[in-house]
Amino acid sequence: MHFVRTVPLRWWMLWLLLPLSSRTQKLPTRDEELFQMQIRDKALFHDSSVIPDGAEISSYLFRDTPKRYFFVVEEDNTPLSVTVTPCDAPLEWKLSLQELPEEASGEGSGDPEPLDQQKQQIINEEGTELFSYKGNDVEYFISSSSPSGLYQLELLSTEKDTHFKVYATTTPESDQPYPDLPYDPRVDVTSLGRTTVTLAWKPSPTASVLKQPVQYCVVISREHNFKSLCAVEARLSADDAFMLAPKPGLDFSPFDFAHFGFAAESSAKERSFLPKPSPKLGRQAHSRPRADIQKVCIGNKNIFTVSDLKPDTQYYFDVFVANSDSNMSTAYLGTFARTKEEARQKTVELKDGKVTDVFVKRKGAKFLRFAPVSSHQKVTFFVHSCLDAVQIQVRRDGKLLLSQNVEGIRQFQLRGKPKAKYLIRLKGNKKGASMLKILATTRPSKQSFPSLPEDRRIKAFDKLRTCTSVTVAWLGTQERNKFCIYKKEVDDNYNEDQKKREQNQCLGPDTRKKSEKVLCKYFHSQNLQKAVTTETIKGLQPGKSYLLDVYVTGHGGHSVKYQSKVVKTRKFC
View 1 (cartoon, rainbow, N blue to C red):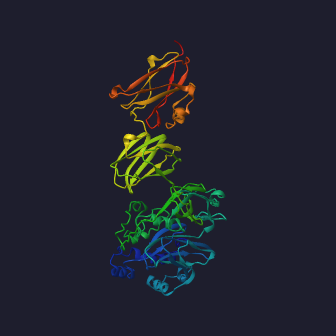
View 2 (view 1 turned 135 degrees about the horizontal axis):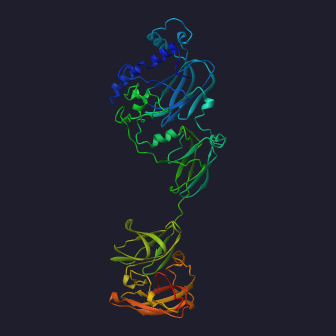
View 3 (view 1 turned 30 degrees about the horizontal axis):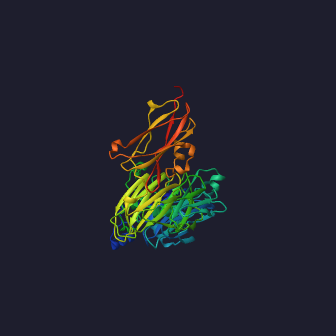
């Protein structure tokens, strides 16, 4: 299938293209009656184009308006392959063969018949139908030995305006533009979770055997499976009624530009700067919401885990293998799966004024409920995150009142409401599991948590350091609390990361060895600037490192640990 070389055949093909250049093309109008009149008037709108050999073209169809493509096979016994890819809507298409006039055979003598006579001759001949198809599958016609003649491909969409692709070649064996599928083209679900699905498929022989560059694209949809990547792209496109102008290069027919009002004689350089047609031109576009669909291209891997899915939801999964050079693709046999149900969360009941211990898995969540038995003006929540930060959300009767990340100990006071019920959601972070203590009360004056200063660091005085002692200080509050200090010898290479791993702020002094205890003392001051205490820790070894911890215990017996501090005695005194 080649562009015509002989003089008579060239004239013959010129007749096909004559309406494209006979006068300036007008875009179809939005007025339906006028639009149909223009369709009937072939001088205003001509729907015939020539298919290039060995190049995929992209084009469009108006609903109920057939489109025809032509190509000439010059010699008998020529291999032929035609592939049609519907995008976004089913197509009806048929391929037929019409014998060329004897004068167009290249062997005739004398002058050819006038073009008008040839035109009438072809119009009157319906030709021999070779193949027909109706549906939205990627379908193809292939013949190892085709006769010479004029081939016509006619396409029709009865459902709506749509897009499609056509590929034709007379050298199908050597071209192989579409990647091959393995003997088992299924996509398998190898792992299924509440929010994740792992997919696997066998590699394409185009990559594994022929060593050609390919990439796989995974498509996730809530609606259905897709039979072509072009159908996926049509659904992802913001413009649902018109195709974009074809890309300059091998994947376009220059005659398609005539339908948009551009001259067919434009050079390739000029075409590369042509503006994309506006959806306002042509038949009125009917917008619709974009489908719930996602496309992810992952290179040449043949296993992929889809994440961030919704629990207990059915999804459809498709895999397409695309030739990295030509960008032409083939669809695997898609699959579908329903994600697992969300584990039912047990809601923990909080009692007024009582501390509750909570454990949250990594990236997990816990739900707590607080329903005060008496009328109240305010509700106070005390949250103590023992390890890493945790997110807290508080809703009152369904209304979100609070959403914050909590690290260390925090206090939140919310306005109350008669007979109100509070739902607390605690969400762990990505680093690891979270441990915390939470207290809810309508009487904050009788709470179990000790009052704490904002600065909970232990300060060491370097100038007061000796070979056997260190002096440290920490802040207190206006309320009288009990403070206990503990020491523990550690290696010289003890670093902040090790200290953080060991530092569970919710562990009280009862978890420490008696030999590590230095002393306990009470102190407070009405003047916060004077609410500070110092302590000299004696009996240490020269040149050794010690981990120091201070615990403060409230009236309810709940302890909170200050930030740990590593100190080192002098080696020489």
